[in-house]
Image 1 (cartoon, one colour):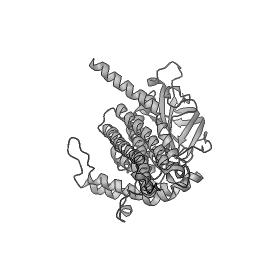
Image 2 (cartoon, one colour):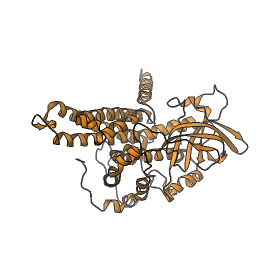
Image 3 (tube, one colour):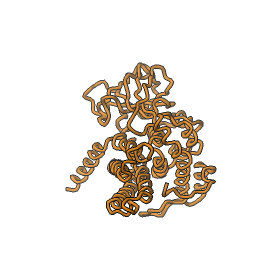
Image 4 (cartoon, helix red, strand yellow):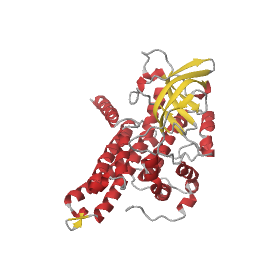
Length: 420
């Protein structure tokens, strides 16, 4: 790839944990105020992820896209290197990294393959509710095992008839003694067929008129609990390396201690999780944009038409310039959203902007990349065909672009009314 830098061969040998440990003894805190420079530790993590992508993801991405096989070899290598479970608390054996730092890794992995990146990103997002809402015992039990061996988890919220409309969820949990009995179906669940445990949102208030803020609760459920049946792997347009399935829960018995926070706190937990997870969606889309620009630039410099490289034709050069504009602004957008989360502030506004803008830009850039490649771009022997298919999902999961605009406008108007 045109912009892949030369990285020392020792990068992959060092691993993320060594980089992290070394940073604890150094002053890596950036100065106050705006600062567009990564600190030394962040640069090392970024380079580590970039090297891993170049050596372990890009060479096999097309294979997993075509076969739909689950990339266990890649996932196990990423786990061993320390590129997974980045935000797990230190007392569970994790590195307790910031959302911003995790986004740096996400952008690099998505450059190589959005599908493989989705496995790792959604695994991390699924851990989020447990990290910020779980008890110490819950965290040690379910997050600790992810550090001990390469296990995965899933985020079970979406249903066949309830996607963006979380309030429409029908999966129910009924309390019986010291257990909750769960019945219902989930759909489009990433890692559903390979997860060790599930984070699940269910309706616990039987009153259909109960407000969303009191109607739902969240649970952590072991995959091997009787009554859980994952469906077939869905064959999707893009991001095909990812394992996406429906899940049926039939009289699944969950101990009361596996509820997060309290009864009725589910909606609040999920909305907070979306705010914390959407910066990763923006970062992933940005990684895809970078790949589109790199592939298009390389091709435009090599391909000739009318006696000169097509990059010298104004129409093509303008498309490359627009990609560059979209890349830089998408990166700033997801970084701002991640930074807001790390400050401990409510980040709905910035998280939705970063996710929506980068997702829409990724789709435009992928389309332009195919256009620059011409007929070759429409063929699966060239990388941009996959990029175009992969890009679409960024406008759909973790809240569609339309839902993001709804959130943004609501936040904007609420703030405006407060100042009138």
